[in-house]
View 1 (cartoon, rainbow, N blue to C red):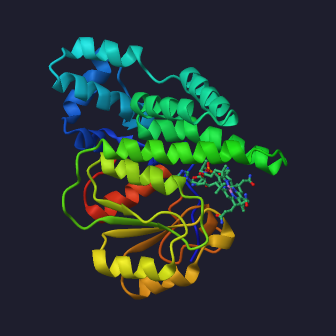
View 2: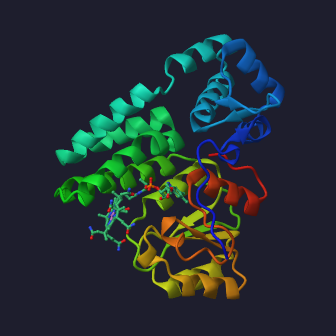
View 3: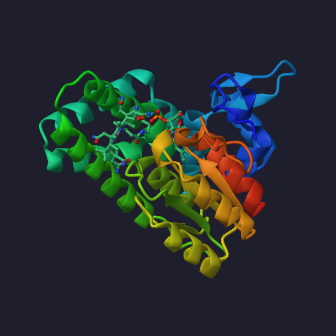
Length: 295
Ligand code: B12
């Protein structure tokens, strides 16, 4: 089985169309086009035929717009508010710097406040993509350069996990339905990407069960048998944690399972291309649940 790397940001499949955004927000495509032409709440880019393509930042702005309008605020006023609080790259860099500093100082109180504010202001997807991912990558580079920053990494990842749990807990309870099951392979301690996905799915009203880091293979098999999930994502961050025999065992039992994370790229997913990015994961969930999930 060949593997497919995560699509580039320029790859059109990483973006959402007007129809997908309309379904996710429960508004009509006509209204979205009106918000674009009247208030400039438009897509990130357009295809050759003028088709609109929205990214996480635009989705966040439109969700805010829709919430404000539903609260009875006039569309023009709401658009002004949304545009004035727009998440700009400069603002994201500022937030990233503040979080990095609080982590370096192992200031858990400041970290919790900054992360809650970030998630509320940017939305989970943009907070992860635009702010937390760069901060975490920088941590990784420091580690690789031999800098001893274990305390900062520990503080940061613990605080991010906890903030994401708080954010998920604010969402309304999901319907009682077959869940999406997320699990890390048995030796895998890098759990944040799955925690982010669990949060985004909770916010989107999709039932999700996240088993956490370092899950014993038998537990994944038994939980899948018990919950009858619509989809299982088996996460591996590094090649030495990818458990191909567990993946094969789940597939043999007819569990709808996909390999997720860069750890699978050298060995291949065996059951379809590797799910290696948040938008790709959301599309996989959409395909298996039959409903458009854009976060
Ligand atoms: C935080 C962290 C830890 C924490 C994890 C805590 C936690 N609860 O998650 C701790 C301290 C436990 C840890 C431990 C280790 N770590 Co570490 N860690 C990281 C760090 C800094 C961030 C991990 C992360 O969340 N990445 C997510 C984003 C930031 O990564 P990304 O590359 O942008 O994202 C890719 C995918 O994940 C995917 N993606 C992004 N978001 C999403 C969302 C979804 C839903 C999906 C499906 C995909 C997806 O798209 C990207 C393209 O591939 C990375 C550095 C890095 N660059 O990732 C190192 C890193 C992953 N760790 C590394 C190593 C070596 C280790 C240790 C072996 C070292 C050690 N200290 O003992 C152990 C291994 C533990 C184990 N058995 O798993 C290396 C791995 C190198 C390799 N490829 O083999 C890295 C890359 C650091 C480095 N530069 O060398 N680590």
